Length: 291
Image 1: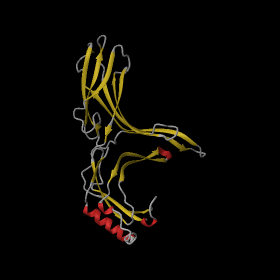
Image 2: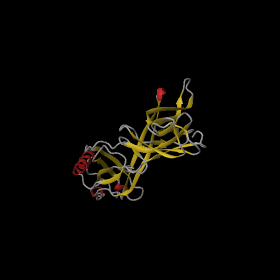
Image 3: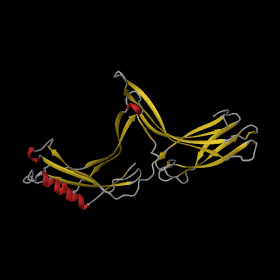
Image 4: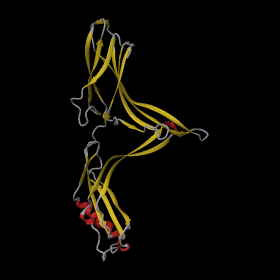
């Protein structure tokens, strides 16, 4: 922080207008705060105070170099940078001992992505991060850095649904009569295909059970998919992480098992048709909040 014996700098952000998560800035809104200047000993020369706001992405992963050898490579890219000259002490040549608060407001672009940090073991799995930082400089000698988190702007309102076409699964009993084997068809639809973190996701399920096996419950997972690309090398890596898991969900009543005399009597095409018709009726939605 420079010469801490004479001048101290720190940044204090105002989260009173924060929406959703506490202490998370939102893209598209103002980031408000104060630079705290602590003159600790005696008056100092009035020096310009500059505030720098930046966002960067960093990738670290094993990539194939010339000759085919795999090496661990790291790359960074600054995708957002802004400097603000703060009007702190106009008309004064020197600043007396004391603590001063210099306000600032920065409009964050709506296009900024959310903060992200994936991968901790750099030797095995690599690392990917999107990080934001505030830096204040007073003259050339005094500086202070402060990281902060950003969440993406809300997605535009949309009511376009997204379908997952019915998929057939062969059901074979682990125990019990072999004659209860058969197919089960499961389909799903989300009411709005465009949702963000903190939004409710409405999921409609449909099922047709052509087996004698009683399926008690299912599990729904929200999975985040990220593809990393290492600059000009163009090596890529895909990662998946489960953001949320909702267990012990009951399937619709149409997923009850068949009687022994009905097992295997319906064609795959008929099962699919029944499933699609049920999805169109949009009965009994399951609501899950995206973390």
